[in-house]
Image 1 (cartoon, helix red, strand yellow):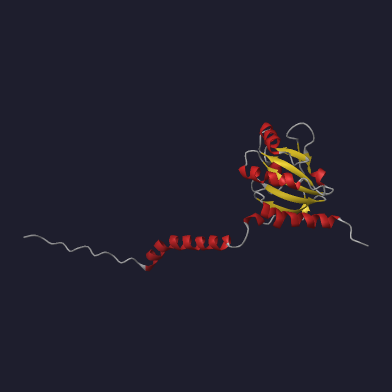
Image 2 (cartoon, rainbow, N blue to C red):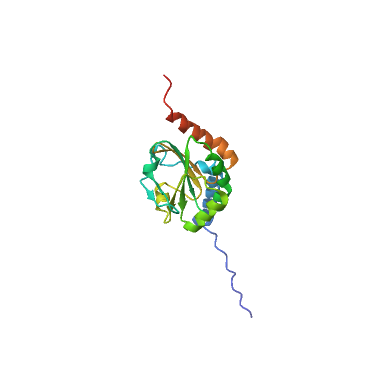
Length: 197
């Protein structure tokens, strides 16, 4: 005679156990929805900077070669386009011809902060592509860029009389120069002129 054992009856999962299983999926879906909504909010290059309308950081950088470097004191009078760049940065290479064009406008000065670069590589970069910068400071350890609130290279700032008035994150393009940078430069230059009497 064979003995039969009753089959094990599977337990029904409790409601709480079902929720624990669904919780990671619900969390993932909530994050995905949040990221999707943030993508539609506009241009990521327009991340606000805490330094807008604040004085330029106190910094002093040596030159990448002989000559004069760059410091915060040098940005106290006039309008400056401050470009953070590196020779190893492909987007910096792509935007460089636009900086060469912008440097032809005598109403403002284009200056550069060379970020975590070897001096010989920076010199070779400027020798091959042209040098739009009136002054270039070598930020070899990246400390000055941190003080400027830089997320990564390239980034471009407009400074008027020692005050940061505009920030552009990422590589410049013909479109962003026309729609973002030039209008901001015109505002900075217009604010510099005395009011008509």
